[in-house]
Image (cartoon, one colour):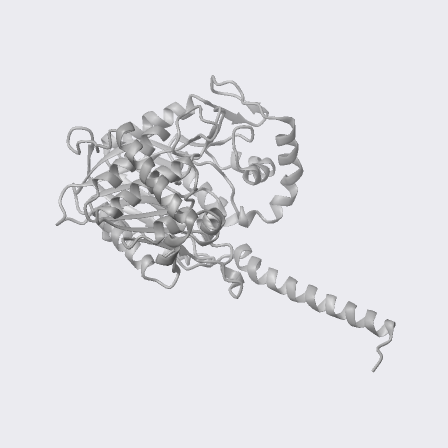
Length: 477
């Protein structure tokens, strides 16, 4: 049967329209749940009983702030070296760069001496970083190493495509816990002055008594539940990968790198009682782990902790991107806060997240109306720090950004630590950031002695051009 050209054209147009409708329906299935996330009921949002029921036992930890990227790398290598039984770690980004290979070399050496190593990383970001690099199989094929991807890409679940694993921690022998905002990459584990450097921080905790429920025990319970869930899938576990020349070479290079690192670093952990401070108690704040938009549990609990402030409330976040409910909740926190209530965020010039800076361009006036003093960081490198200081006792550290992605979409960890001594360490670190910052007034900058940061014409032009477009999809920023 001969089909006329006219009928062919009609059939082609129909096929294209059907494809366009299906693509639109798929996109809506992926985006609408993120644009309209669930909210907590008023009763759940007001419940503060968790502050007592989920707290650690008293005096179960010692702690120390890890402020610099160089110290952050050294403490990770020392933790891995000290491990006798187990290393569990989670990271949004495990980059196959210089820092990533140093950490991988230490993990491989630990596995060689019989330590069980378990790693969770994000399914999408992990695939991008390790898909074409032998580092993944060089580690994962070891009999004592398991690597799992959280929420591997599944095109049959469009509502889950945007959910990311955003946690950053090391848990060693259920005794040492390192938690903060640093990924395993050169951006976070290099020294100040390195082109990749970011300002960030971690908190290191030591467990004083395994009979007590402490921060490490809280982390163990959370990690095991996620590790054994269907949300995480094993990757790079095929021993046959070791027969590949590139993987064998990578193994050899990692072994040689470790030999060099063992002479370059002290690889000794701090004395818990001489170099770390006492902790009264801790609370672990987590999001629901379902790979789909969820109610803002961690955000609500963080706000409840901030509402306990009586003398000072300092908030440091790389990004300040808010939808309506977030804005209203934070405004209520600031309204109830003490006179010394302030927020520090990257300036558009210093920040390295173009999308977040573009959103901030339009919505900065909203941030200035929150009722807190708004400061912008003017440092030479971007600030990736996420922390909250409440009065002179409570400090909160972790991976949580003040943005819709952290509030509704991603897995997140924040650790609240009650310790006047650690609070003083965090206050000193925050002060060093504020010294490089300027307070934002309606007409520009006011208080502060730092020099305003400058950026290239092209960076600022891109931020300005993107700002109205980003505003339409700010729930994905």
